[in-house]
Length: 473
Length: 158
Image (cartoon, rainbow over all chains, first blue to last red; front, side, top):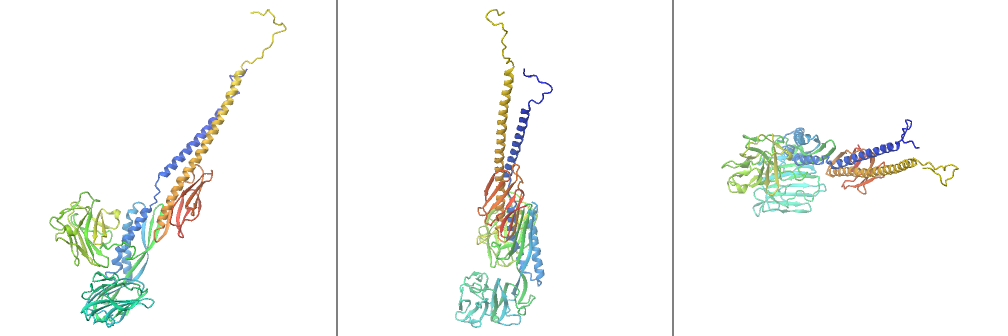
């Protein structure tokens, strides 16, 4: 009879179930681990993959948009510093301040952003500011070399003030500027008084056509003002006035018959190959001052997972989209306020020609909602300066909403039609916003849109917008 | 009751003693059936684990590949901006998926990433699109860096 009761010596029964139990436990554990892996994978899939590329590009864009406007007046040595090292030091200081301001929002996110100066390209600014002086060199030599060789000319403004040679053929002893290229080709512009017509004329000698032709006669009045780089005569476009057309650099620039007219000029050329004996180094006309022609920089953005570096040069031509109107003060500067409800800041026109401001927008919604501008019967918004037209806006609608609504100066002005006309190179153009309905505290200039609590947009006649950002402290 | 009729007196016939046989047979039968069931259960369980591991490995590699492809395209976006001299993107990826390692291979001609598990035959292909050339490289799974070197992007082990 089978032993159904068992004995103390038979304790090995049930091993099959035991082993099975263990095996099933292992299987279950394996399944759980796989489930865990699957959950982790799903978790990984839902995580963002952003490594900060947008922030890096944003920083780069901020620097590119604002670097040259921030340093241009310093680089072009408007204060006429005689030392090149001082000019470079001033440019460096401005770039450092811009870099610090632009990097602030990124530092708060744990990223490091910086702009490092790699080098400068030397340039020279040639000036004559005495309008009663003939356009000769320091020794009163009539035919003289202005620039021995330059690869690029950035600015060449010539304002003749009188004493033009009277002739029917400009090739006679009329005043001229000759630009001779590397192959010996020559482009010339003549300014003279036409004897037959008794009126001033401008003639251009093309590199491929040695006979000078009168150009842009409609715009040529009085002793004319020429902008050779912008191609304008008395501020009016003159397509035929195309600097060094068909002439290849390097250029030699000579003045011919400088004794046949008087006037002023302001030129900025790349390089330093300017005959020193033809110019003074002080402010006695004609004179030269050192300028920084352009700046080579290294833009760096570093975060925990990203390292991004760019090396590029900055000048007025690069990048496109550089601003026309810029702050007269650097980023971080406090703007004037009175009781926190009046704004006053200054702007400059960095373009070659005058611009017209037709409309404005004020957006203070970053500070508080429902802010308005109202100065009673007086203008609420002024764009004014010593040598510029005045743009004012008031009366209708009487109260301006500071929420980004666009208002035209012409429609709202007391005079029934005022634009703000700002000449090239004009400084100290003042923009006033009077009587904000809410105290906006202390405001500082910033170039970073993300920092902006208040923005003011000036709309130019060509449709472009110049936006100015302010950070509430 | 007595037997007084035609029954032989040579002695009683011994009948086989099959008492308690059904119990033993039942025991053997139940043991056998249990063994069969257990074997089936373990076999099926092992198959499930194997299948789940393959599926999980595939899904994990796909996620990893898509993350790497996204970061590769981010690096390309930065590298394709003008005047860029250096780009380095760190990508945190798991060293193992479903308990086994894997390799990442860049197929620049096909603009694809191929992720292959070292333990199973599971492999995943993920496509990417870049304007910057990408070097053909192969790295072990784990943290990697995407760097711009000599005008082309390269996936390297971190």
